[in-house]
Length: 93
Image 1 (cartoon, helix red, strand yellow):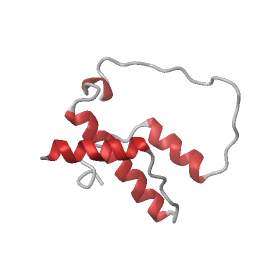
Image 2: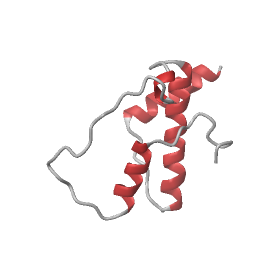
Image 3: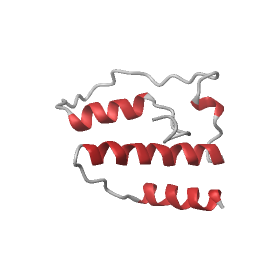
Image 4: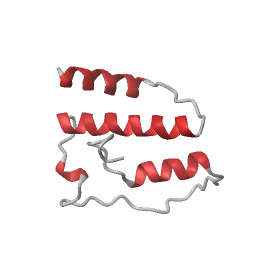
């Protein structure tokens, strides 16, 4: 998978998304986690809106599309997806 999505870092958000999207779940009205910023973490090394940030974001969308296709689910193309793909196209030129 790494060669197909070179910029994607599998992170907690993708894992949580698929666990909740494809399995049963309950919604709680409680905060059960805290956001932790790690200055030495993988994401902290990528400057927001940098080229690598957009490529990583695009890989995340591609990965979601692959999983949804395997599960016979439709992907909703929202403005975030369209903007990310447009910027990736511009960056690749």
